[in-house]
Amino acid sequence: MGIRLVNVRKQFGRTVAVNDLTLAIEEGEFFVLLGPSGCGKTTTLRMIAGLERPTRGTILIDEREVTHLEPRRRDIAMVFQDYGLYPHMSVFDNIAFPLKIQGTGSSAERARRVTETAERLHIAHLLRRKPAQLSGGEKQRVALARSLVRNPRAFLMDEPLSNLDAKLRITMRSEIKRLVSELKITTVYVTHDQTEAMALATRVGIMDKGDMVQVGTPLEIYDRPATAFVAGFIGSPPMNMFKGELAPSGRLSTTPQFLSAAVAPGRLAEISRAYPAGRPLTVGVRPEHLELEPSGARNGASAKVELIEPLGADTYVYLSCDGIEMMAVARRIAVKVGERVGLRVLNEHIHLIDGETGRNLAEL
Image: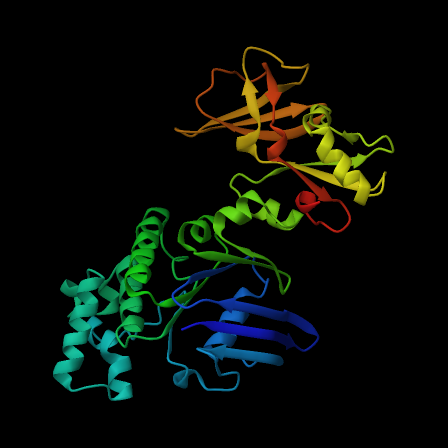
C-alpha cells in the first residue's frame, strides 16, 4: 500500500509547519523522515495518521483519499515515542486491546494472534507481566507488538527508540528492520538521528523548516547532498565547510589554500560558465576524505595537529591549516599533538556549494 501527499500544507496560526509537501512513498518501502527538531517531520507523520488535519492539500493511502478520514478508518498502526502502554493491563491484554476494540475474531483467535506476534518479537515469556515490570526495550517490543497484531496496511513510527540507551537502540534498530523486511509493510519512520535513518531506510526524506529539501537512498544523500544544509546534517562527524569564491581568472580562491589546487580545472571551467566570478562559494570535504600523511607535506599542503581522539577503528584528528580549523578521520595513525602532517583530498570528494542559495553545484 503506497502513501502519497500532494501539496500538503500545515499551518498553526501564522507558523508554517509543513510547506506544500508533495511526496510518494512506495508500497513496502521503509521511508524515514529525517531532520532537526521543529522541521515538520512529526507533523507530517501525524497528518498521514489522521491525528492532524492539513490546512490544504491531499493525502492518499493506496490511492484512496483519506485527507479528512478519521484515524481508525485508515487501516494504519502507529508507535509513539512514549510507548503508550496501559499500566493496569498485562502485556497480553495490551497487545490484544486493538483486536478487542475492533471485535476481531473470537477470544481463541485473538489469543492465537497475540501469542504469534509476541513470539515474533521475543516477548512471549512476558505476556503475564504488567508494564511496570518491564525494561525499556521490553516496553518498546510490546508497543510494536500491539501495532502489528492486527496486520495493518501501513506502519507509522514516531522516534520509537529515543528513550532507549545506546546499546539497546542498536539492537532494536536491527529488529525493526528485520520485522519490516519480513512483513513487507509500508513504513514511515520519524527520527532526528541520522545514523538511525541511514541504517533503516530504503529512502530518506530530509526536512528543514517545513520543506522537504532532498529525497533519496541513504548513500545517494551521503554522496551527493543537494544543499549545504544536507551536507552538514548528514555524516558523523559533519562535513568540513570552508569559504571561497571563483576568481575572474576562473581559479578557485579559498582558505585553506591547498583546496584551490585540488579541484580539477575542467570542473572549475564548467562552473565558471554558469557561476559569476566573485560570488561566494562554500567548499565542503568530509573528514574521512581528508587524507593525512605523517611523513610530511605533499605539494606544500600541511596542517598542525591540535587534538587527537582515538576511538578504536577510527581516529578523529583535529587540525589547523592556514588559520582554519578542520577535522580528519583516519585509521590508526602515528601522529602527536603539535606535529605537522601532510594533507591531500581527491577532486571527486570536494563539494562546491553556492554560498548564497546553498545549492550544491555538482550537477553543473
